[in-house]
Image: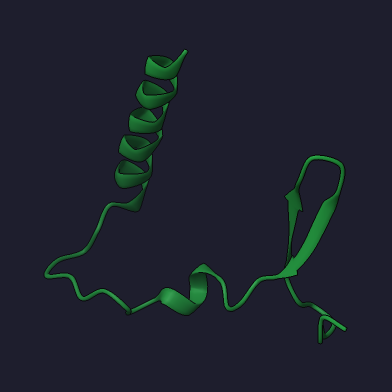
Amino acid sequence: MLKLRPGARVRFVLEENAVRLLPVEGGIESLKGAVKVDAPQDFKAVRHRAMEERSREEASRA
């Protein structure tokens, strides 16, 4: 019904009283090369900044 093959990735979506199982199309690997950059990127630093930003956003909501 979901047309899944061995090794396919799925996503679990929690709802009020149910869990939906959805196929994941591609993955982050499929985005490689989608955005052109001028120089090498420091992905650890980018991830760290994104995590800090999200922490600040969550703290401001609390």
